[in-house]
Length: 373
Image 1: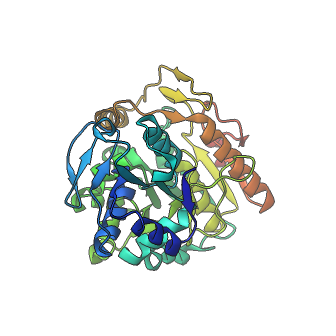
Image 2: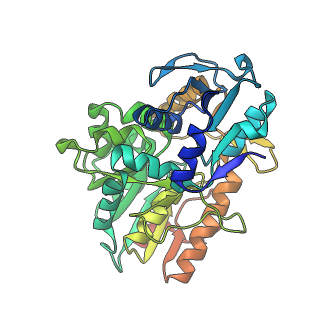
Image 3: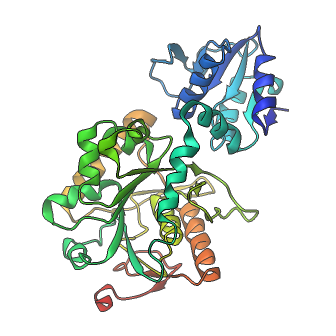
């Protein structure tokens, strides 16, 4: 049986006890990078990373090996991610690693406590308190990047408070409208658009604030004076007993994942005190959709705005280059997240409406967008 540890002291003690066996970190993503930094800081001897991706490179001065090159009997493996621990565990099992040679996080707090020691995480996440109940009794619009969205829709929202995300910046060249709040947490997107300050300034141009993950590329700018619009959230995966994603009561502590950045924006909007939340351009219709039974369905979905379509194609190419597959929208997880948002809203006297023209999202009451003005 693999061993899971739910507090930092026992977790680190167990890792140290693995020596003099060869220690490897399973998963060479951002979580693995942070875990390697922690090992280096505390003098924990380790060999490198194992990862299913085929590219070979170095992280924290350590090599990255594909699973097929490992001797399952020789190594001891530390799984780097709580959210993806079962996927990483399956990969280790497939190469014959013994269960007793694997150590995992028992909860997401262990990882974030390690990260907090390295980067003073809580200091930055707590800054979200600035926005608590800032917009009580007001309405806002959360903009999706679906094919039904029109430039003329955005221009009607000039005097409203709006949230938007990801590739919405592609439309800035066609309108003076800018979102009040901008959000992005997808790793591929953030690596591309938040590593360079020039790109960051494009994303935040005209916005009151931009929100991104502490695990994303934008976190490197946390102390830059010219990036004072940038705020950071601690994104965690946590489901209730019925497998519906949790909805955050306090975004200054954590915000829950739900398969779509829209779920992050819904939690932020509720935290800010909005009483009416309108969704627009939320078609809930993707080119490639993955379902909980493992099946995949494809649809002919094309954004009618050339600027947005060009951005989507670019990021699809980056995703395929890195992971070997195109973006797979987990529609069942997203649907469960929307149901969780509806439940939270109903219990807290918040109204969420869907003002999208068409689309497949039927969790929220439908309203006609043009009739809201």
